[in-house]
Image (cartoon, rainbow, N blue to C red; front, top):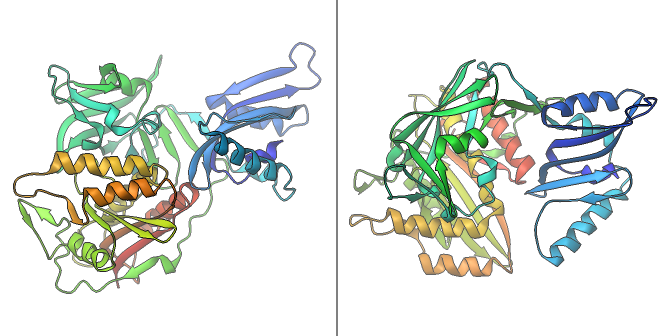
Amino acid sequence: MFRSLGHINRLMLQNIGVKKHGRRNLSFAMYTGGDVDEALGLTERHNSVKNNVSGTGWEEGARVSIGCSVKGRVWSRDQGSIPALLAWCQRVGSKLLDDTINIENIIANVLLPSEVEEFPADKIVLAIEWPAELLGISEDRIALSPTAQEDSQPLYMFELLFDSLTAGSLQFALVVEEDTRVGGFELRLDAQLGFKVQQTSGDPLTITIGKRSCRLDEYFCSYPPLVRFIDLSELDGNLLIQPRNPRELTLDAAQFEPWDWTGFDLTKESYWKDGVGREDSIQWKVAQAYMNGNFDIVFDDDSAGEAADLVCLKEDGDVIRLAMIHCKFSGAATAGERIKDAVEVCSQAVRSAKWKWRFADLCRHLLGREERLKSFARPTRFLQGDAARLAELLRQSRFKSIIAEVLIAQPGISSAIRSEDQDMVIAAAMVYLKETIGCNLQIICSP
């Protein structure tokens, strides 16, 4: 029955039931959260066996939940139609009959949560993301506003920004358009609660989800932001989640695509800045390549809360191609010198993974941003195509599969000359995207 856990990447077990043989007064125990590691240790000894397990992970590019018991039950907390249920049953059934699935390998590579007494300040942060609980909710149902005012804006106008990490605290900020800070926050460990989040600067902020409202820092006390490190471990409040056996991260040279940047200013990232379009910017060069590639939609989503700097869509036979491109200026005179050049853009690429399996939400995100970000000087964000064509692609997505790709355009990265730190960051982003949404990360860089 435990073969049903096969082919699931980044599997994190949340519950394990253990049968303990040879104990008269205790024959069964249930372990959850940070105790899962203890349960796995018991099952590796001769006096205990796994009775039932459940957890979450990624399979075939989508987030999944899975549970199974030795008695012959398999279950999932996912929702869907009757055809989706039948397809799920077929996938699970084929795994149960697949004797090539090695249960021990699955258990050896699960992600394990453990409570920490201090934060891992020696780790490099790859990205900070909204709590996973918000990912399953449509962005337009979530709004943020100053507590004393009624003027609210949807979640897609905001972004979390990592500031610093020490052994005692995590500092992060909430930013809005043009990276304007509207609030600073601090996450600290707490002896009684495990962890606590407080707003440290800016007007008190309120989050509204549907009809429910509360202070944003109070919400974070229950559902903290997720911090992802470049070794692919994660910090969720006071829980450090990491693989039992960390894998070696390697790079594929074929994923580096050197471009000639002659005639473009590598210190200029965005196409639109200070009320004018800059045709010598990195973003404009990349946009031109996709516009000339006959993409139906080339949308400039560059601003806080973006899905990507450029979102490009093309109807191609029975599929819809989705390209999410993240652009970043070079921070050094010579390509390959700064690790920050890699961290910032790889962070954006990792955060955009959620859109691959939420295509309808992505289209609504772009339409909402088009309406809220337009101005007299810039009436539209569509560099190619329009809202009507985007709406048509959304309708077509009911009958056509989505083929997604994630790219970063960073001339500060050299295909020939890179530091070990840069390689480590890029490899982490590559592996994460491959294991979760099944996409390769393509890097547009300097020679």
